[in-house]
Image (cartoon, rainbow, N blue to C red; front, side):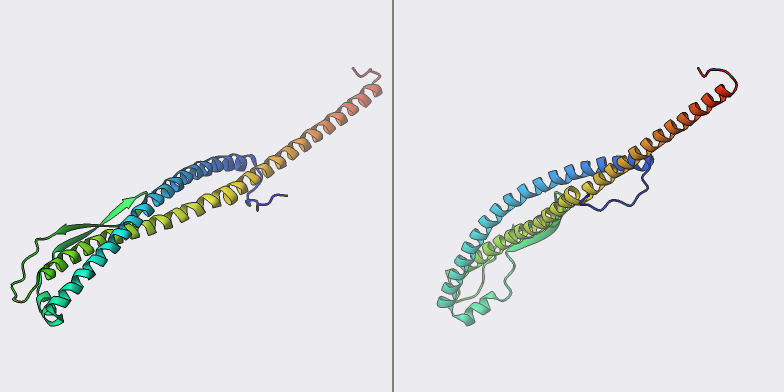
Length: 222
């Protein structure tokens, strides 16, 4: 008995030909999906390495930025630091555009450093400028890390989706078609045997009838 539920179709020759055509199409689709899954898996592993490196660099950038922020706070005081931070022009321009890889869309972030304008306030310390530089660098690393994390997340989701489709075709859909094809072939073979048997019976009866008719007419049956 088949482990898979058969497809509910009439067991005819036309159905058999159509199912064989469909199963070839499904097998081609399975091969393409398997190839896509392999490529996505390889791309995910590459992205994982890139993400880990960016995460490590970003952590170091955040640590350095907080170090200089602490120095600026210690030397200037919180009040002067807040006043110096008011109205500062941005030092980083960020643009977000859609990007596609292996059919997966994710945001690509491009950044551009802007000139750091000097702060015209008395009482500012060199540590304040260093803090601005480090915070700009940290923001730059965070954008790269965010892009990498988003791309990795979506690629992994697409890889899992491809894996599920490959498994569904390999272990469920294609076997159902093959089992149904074998069932229809067995039904048609049985019907063909029955037809041949009926033909033999009819021929036997016809031969017997001709033999009896020849004897009644006094003619030997050839």
